[in-house]
Length: 188
Image 1 (spheres, rainbow, N blue to C red):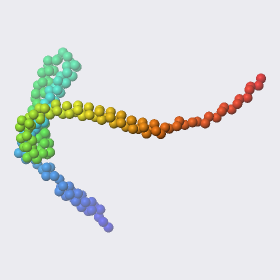
Image 2 (cartoon, rainbow, N blue to C red):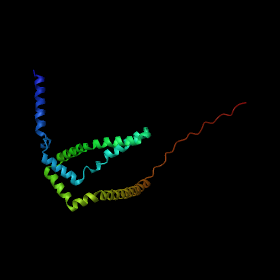
Image 3 (cartoon, rainbow, N blue to C red):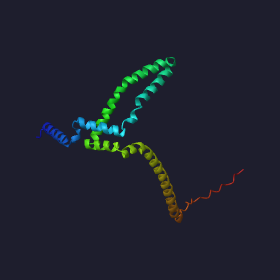
């Protein structure tokens, strides 16, 4: 008889060993040099700049919320919320650290250095400054193109389908209507 407990443990061990062998090398600890390369790339491409307004925006919304509830304490509310927001600003480093780790996991140290080097060049700087405008213009062009394609596809298929459908008209069904039974005249 097979001992299922032993078989189960052996299977679990085999799965664990196979899983550990298939783990990518990136799952290991990331070196400080690799993280520094990631930080430089992040700075070069302004990857986290879009998050600069999170804390100030949250503080402004919180002030508005508190002031709405206690309008007579507007100055105190603004002062306290601003003080607390400034105290929390040091936690921005947490986001930068997380971003560096994410980039270090996604790119090799050499790739990150190449990214930094490219964005330090004039073409790299120009790509950063004009990239969003170019992307907006491209999106507009794609929308115009899609509208034209949609119009042409609709018109061309409608035209061809019209020739097929009109060439094979479907006769309207005729219902056989029975004549109503004659009603005998009423006797008086």
